[in-house]
Structure formats: structure tokens, C-alpha cells
Length: 118
Image (cartoon, rainbow, N blue to C red; front, side, top):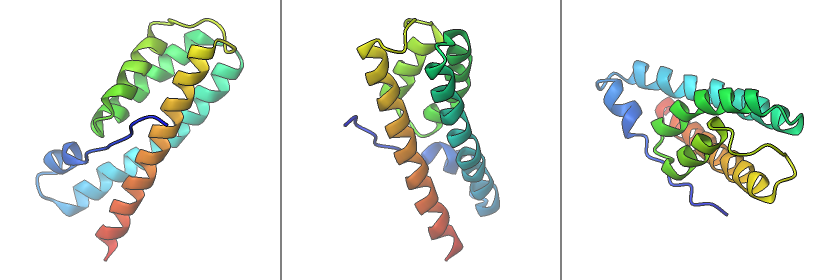
């Protein structure tokens, strides 16, 4: 299991103390991250590593916003098209770690959203 510690300070700093803006930034993360993960997985299954690299580039900003630095580095490898075969064990491990940590981040952001509703 990869280390998936997230930090929401980026969202807090960029919302300048405005709860509605903070909530909006979290909602954007919640909407875009699962969509990109699904697309990443689909393109990986199709061995479309050019598109995998493009999706990885987009996903890096989401990952960076929650400070998943180890996942950011894996996405860098995907963006650089370091892999060229979905059956490569290193690729499968990296893909698993990306998906797991991003899903954990989504769950933690959802928990934060619930706290904001109270």
C-alpha cells in the first residue's frame, strides 16, 4: 500500500478564508479526479501511452494540490512515457499506487466537505 498522506492547505490558502471558495475548490477536485482516473485506467488498458501521458500531465495538478508528492513523481514517469506496455509489472504497480492514493484523497476531501456542511 502506498503512502497517501494528503494536505488540504493548498485549498485553504487559495480560498483566502472564504468558505464558499474553499468548498468550490474541493468540489472541482472531487469532480475532476475520478474522471481523470477512469480515463487514465481506460487508456492504459488500451496501451495508449500517448494519451496516458496527457492525462497524467493534467492529473499532476490535482495530485500536487493535495501534496501527494510520491504520486506526482509516478505521474511524471507516465507523462514522459517511461512505460510502453500495460503488462509491465512496474507500470502496473505505479498505476495501482496512483489510483489507490487518488481514491484515498477523494475520500478525505469528501470527509472535509461533510465537515463544511455542519
